[in-house]
Length: 214
Length: 214
Image 1: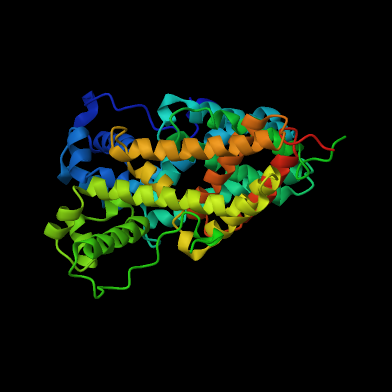
Image 2: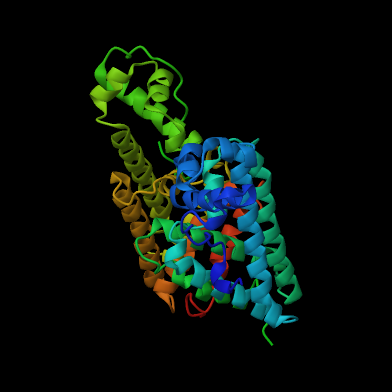
């Protein structure tokens, strides 16, 4: 079951070959989880197909039977990250239906908790992949842009729903804070800066961009 | 001469072999500028020493005569980026000596202008290198952390100087906005989100974290 703690989380480390190693779907799943973990820890360019196959306890021939290319694997891993991200997002805001400001605050609390955790010490896997991909025609580029456009769209929508004075600007400012927190997790030796993200979000929500004070 | 427009800028593209190609110091400079540009455009892992030597119109033997390793080149390029960053920072705040809030606003205006420019479409070269380096023992790690710790220290100091209610939290919130703007430049198809960075910074400066309203 997903919890708020799984925001953009890498999957748990693959624990080794299992009983189902002989079947194609299990091999695919094992390769996928191995790639997901290795891509997050070492970056997509820091991991070869040979390494993924070896770490998954399989062969390159098997890998290419279930994934058409390394890029295919990269795209499927990103799709999994974004799917989980929105799943957790929806779970976090669900208890505060009809209270958009509380939904935003709950999102920032969940994000802070996740980003400060040891599992997220490499920051956001989607953003990191964007940094590594320099070719705008890469099949992952569109997916990365759609994911972030959707994040921006949802934050703006919540700001509109809470009756913010400048909902689009507030939504975009909150977007910058989230991306900044993920990046700061990698740039700083401690989580001190990241831990300010909820205080910063609340300050923005209370600011001239936010809700009219009642 | 540096201008605010050079914040974290990649150097101008090297224009090709020059008349001074025969001297060691010119070869070193040419290799350095080539590496600086290639690292920014393709990432440090996307560029081989062979490519740098070829693009600089020299040989690998010459390259290794003036740089001890690719890591040495990476570290020297980062030192150049951080040196320029602080040079521009100091130039931007100089006209507002004794007016810390204006200094912060001037920094955000200069950063916004720089980050939205075509030359900075790959975001921050120092942060990007941090994403690519996965080994904490890499010689660049300490440099990257010191650069960001210094950025955080300076922003907090300006917030203290302006008499902010919560100077450390405000400084850290501004730090997150800056890192978020650099990252957002890579993640989004347009600069819409990045363009909000000054409005967001001003909202934070005016917020409960910022200066007491007079």
